[in-house]
Length: 183
Length: 265
Image (cartoon, one colour):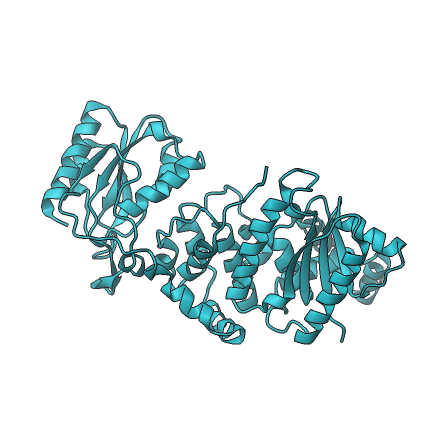
């Protein structure tokens, strides 16, 4: 089973770097899922933890080089925060190799592809994330799935549940609305 | 704690309330159980006789000052050195108005843990105490016969180092054992002086299901991480934990590795 990598890329440098890698036809592993953030300092600890809960095997945070941040000091904060968070996760038994902080500028398409290939290989060596993945926030997941279900699926469910009373349907709707609010 | 100190505290509280300099006094009084004093507000000078201070007064009063400083008038508060550090942090974060607090530093002999009403040794945070001075005070009572000496500051990281020296799977096993006991009572969060957000991300409804070990770990990662650079190592989180989880290890790990943000010009 291939490993899942989540890459948080800042809008101004790393995401543009990924774009350059694409336009330059540089291949990088397809299991890298890029999430664009306005600045790398937008990545808070809950993003990283949630990525692991939802099945990521490695998380890489990419930003502009120090001193090049579009918002002047954003990536200095990223550096301080992510080092603290990675240290704490390592302290709690997560392999440090699953976490990385990397600076990639908009002109470094090749570096982006290399970094992603290297990081994926590194995580593949460790295999799937067994320790820190699993059934966590189950209720939240169930609610999310509920909301994400398409209209057709909902209709199917209702058709199957012939005896569903109006009151029950109303209940489901309330849950859906609540789940939507949660998100 | 000498009886003299407690009498002085009561006298000062009475004087201050009578003169109208303060509208309330924040101190400890006898709690529901023996040797388990609780924090209390005193607004009546006749009630000041109930003020208590001994080695069982483990509660950190600084967090109550957030609420107190929103009230009208000044509050007289008794603080030990470690509580005074917490209050300094709260003043820095604009949670407590310094103008509304009259701080009396009281001498500290270290607090003791209580098991079934009996004394059983110093608190872990007092054994490796590094704070014997008062960063902030208006007046001091009973500090002249303070028998405590601060440790050098390396002792408190010994536990962290011991865990750090083991390999990843051993560390994982250690925290799995410790944190699977967590019942998510949120006591560690509620007691923490620097946990003062009005809306907390850990209050999410979907999180209050029967706790599981993974969720517990991430709960404690977030809890500790939010104190990064702000924790004053007062040890209240570990003290209040009903399951005896060494929560201070996480905070101390962050304190040990803390680097301030370096912004290059």
